[in-house]
Length: 317
Image (cartoon, rainbow, N blue to C red; front, side):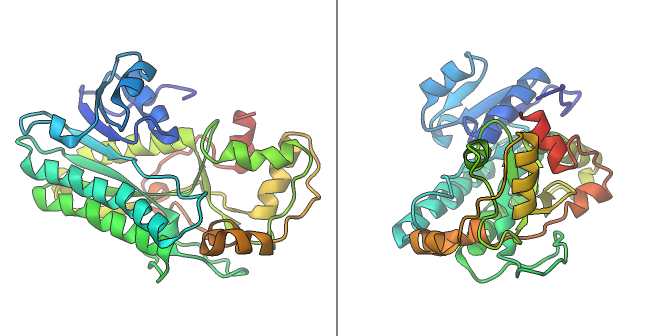
């Protein structure tokens, strides 16, 4: 984080799943800097404890938290990497298990907890909206419906699993992430061909790319936390927020902007058909897109630190 992020004036206990992932590491650092106590649910607790220099309690299972444990906020970021292995039926089941089954275990613990969290921030993705036809310029806000396709179904089921916590008086907030830009995650791989001078449009290049800087992801979490504290009357409700920057770009514009920032050419096109052949429906993540607007964040007055792509990329150079 480039500057301190304020979540709360009161010291809180925060359970974070996926704490050792790209977004999770940034979030944990910000929470610790703000003076909060962090519990990390992780498959490798010893390794995670070392990574966090012993400042975080690391657990391998929700069974390690008894019903009397105090957790004020849950941030659910766990989930297997969506890009990579072809989406066979076995892979789809693994993706569901890493998101939906884990979320259900967290909600099951909330059902038994003597002290209920006041807020459950649960990850989702703009894949919820499916794909937007090339040439469709309409921005999608949080009211846009899902579609009948795997990535949309996965996000919808994930949100429904998290939403079950509302029955226990917890305010549930589903965070629909766009492409998160930072010095980790997908960006280094996306920049590799550009930095080698081999960048250019992918497929048509006209597909929308909705993104957000990782600093703004963490700041937006703090913003939703503060809004939850201000509006205690929404306890037991479920809502969703698009975590995307105000500026949405085409994939070709992304390549041109990155090439300009890194002083490289962007003239080598990559056809879409080899990706379709290799990845099947997973290729939709790269060759199709959605123009997703952060309507709720903007309505609430959230100030993006990096509202434009060029600003975001220059901060990561």
